[in-house]
Image (tube, rainbow, N blue to C red; front, side, top):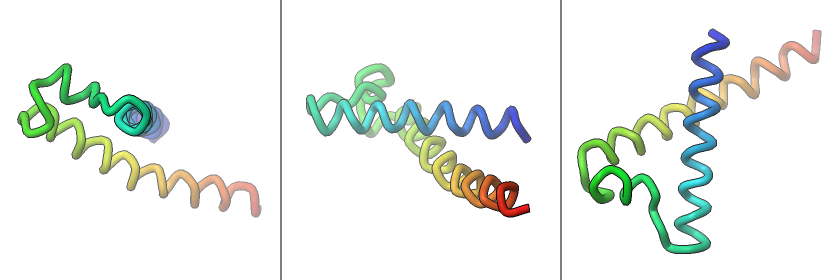
Length: 69
C-alpha cells in the first residue's frame, strides 16, 4: 500500500502545482506538454490526479486512526 500511497501523493502534488500555474499564470503545464486540455493523454492525467485526490482522502482517515490508538 505504501507504494500506491506515494504514487497518489506524487500525482496529487503534480496536479496541485499545475493548478497553481493555471491560477497564477494562466498556464496549463499538462495541456502544454500533452497536446491541449482536450487531448487524450491530458484527460487521462487529469483523471488520474482526481482519482489520486480521492485516494488521499483515505490517507487522512488512516493517519487519524493511527494517532487515536
